[in-house]
Length: 382
Image (cartoon, rainbow, N blue to C red; front, side):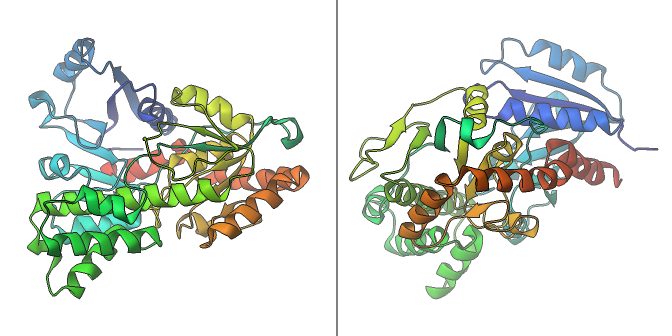
């Protein structure tokens, strides 16, 4: 195949407690499988081993393109190169970096609603839908009856988990902005895409979203998203009290009013260990609330590990997966969530069937290798 750009250089920091290096490693493998000469540089957080990357950039030819995370590669030596930035969170959170990127860059967004945000703000860069992916699946997953973890929840328990906490965090903010943020937060917690919720809240108060400056938009959506994520995670875990749940991640003081008694809190663990825990779990629980038109990598890593995934409803995920057949979606009522999870854990044979039904769909369409094809099309028009 005749490509405009046939060499890719990928770079990110090593973050053992996050999945950054794992994600780019999977994309690197996918690009290589497509016949693109791909090189991956994983750099220490303090940058002491950055020299090999900079030397490679100095020698790079005109048919080379770059891949980074969240448009954070901002070296003078890289500005002239075509670049694909994988934006791993809501773009409002990354707006400072995105707005400062060269206009010829391409942003890959993990949720379709993020493209609406991009267009509304008039960002000049190209944008494509680039959902999270996952690794090559485990071809011989452990049977459910042999898995010693009932339900595994990975994710930080931080941010304001109750509306009173959100209000307290906004002290000193103008009342109009507080009202818009709170209405946005409540709508997002109920499943509304963040930008749409923000635009509706602004309209209800007789203002336009762009009446906020870029810093105000970023702060408002970041605050609303943090509440949506924290409040729904709290509700889920409190509802599952009485079931065997293992939690991995930071837990902020005062997050729970009543700490669930049957949740085992392991604290932070390296990402590689989290993957191993997934392979021992019957259910992998995901609650994010801010990707209702996209996906999070926990969904795909859970499936690859042979677990049954329980996650927020997503229009994108629902295109390929069906509730109670090969995935479970959280219901609106937390009490129903508890009943659903309890019934699932009580029937390991049915869980084996669901995991087996999910695996071929996942392997065919949702690995990092398949996501690499999106990059090739965006950069080369392939």
